[in-house]
Length: 105
Length: 365
Image 1 (tube, helix red, strand yellow):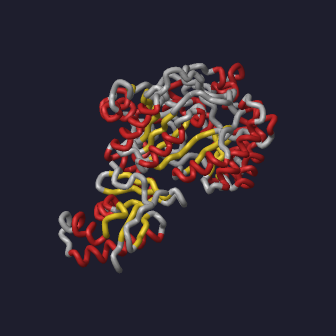
Image 2 (tube, helix red, strand yellow):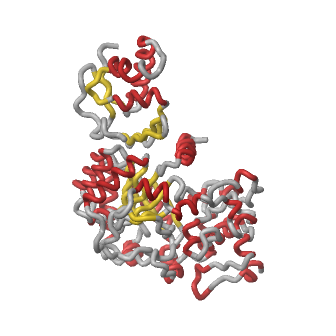
Image 3 (cartoon, helix red, strand yellow):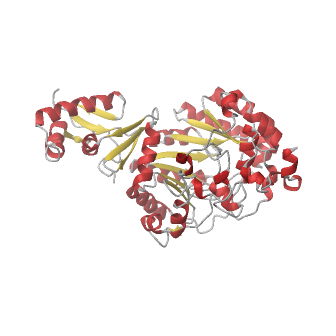
């Protein structure tokens, strides 16, 4: 994957529940429950930070995992969420992302 | 276990108020004859207060936020409130009569990311619907609102409260839902007014009409399964909580008063004087509600219907005892399965008929 930027879709609802993250798409009302690793990626998905940097700064210091493996898993995760329309992927920074990105308590 | 059940179970374990129902006003442009509210709009919450409260809900972990009223769109700041809630990434559901919804409003709701809009429709016949809302032309305007919301891509649910005056019209409302591409939900329960006035209970659907509804497979699916005698009650049921009210959900009035549920008028604290976190964690009333398990219910714990009854603790509270039976739910259980409830055996009568109360001995006959 080339440089990858990830942003949260404007059409989702999201809330931290314990260490996990609950997300529902307003488009099809599908509910997602993200594990702690995925939740960290979600929260950091501001559309401006490359996925590699998110993994480097938010995942590797918290979980004992090699950066290459973590990035591979993260890429698969963001592709899956993008397929459901709840994450946006781009090769350059994303302007149109969730108004609440970065504000979620 | 579905993912939603799993999320609810986790919220219960963490003590998170997963769902909040916020009435932003009691003012309304309709005067529905069965409404449980008084439409006094004096000293209701300001925009700034509501924004502050919504922020507190987010911090407490609330995910589902229902914005309702009264008619919420009567507030000039309703869209600002909704958009702020979406900014904080709530799943927002709006309850409206849609009378004020035109293309522009529908588009704005869609763009805000409102997940679902629930609209009350009482009949497919204007003369019936408008007689209930006491607003001439309301059905036409409500349907217009529903259509523009559907055209904008919003998910809409038609909520059909059934009572004496519209008992025969649910099939017509259901067809309207199909025609407009909306979901349909039916509620056969009329509740006392929140001020305790029970005069409107006389509008409740008579038992014979309820029986017809419960045996309509278009509504309940497998009638045999829906109306089956209650299964044996096990320890899991006895240790269970009566419902989510006060456990993972609550209601906040247009004056900031916190209750376990909109149908459970037990005041637990006021957000104008205390933070939501303080009320949610420290309210003696909420603690009392949370302490109740099915096995603690004064009459219902010995009822054969314990595991399947839709018993509403709020309705029981309004009848005088939050641990007691709710006669409306006793009736529903009895009409559904044909098995007498413990509440009925204990002498609780259906108050649904006002002067025509059904006494237990008559039911036995």
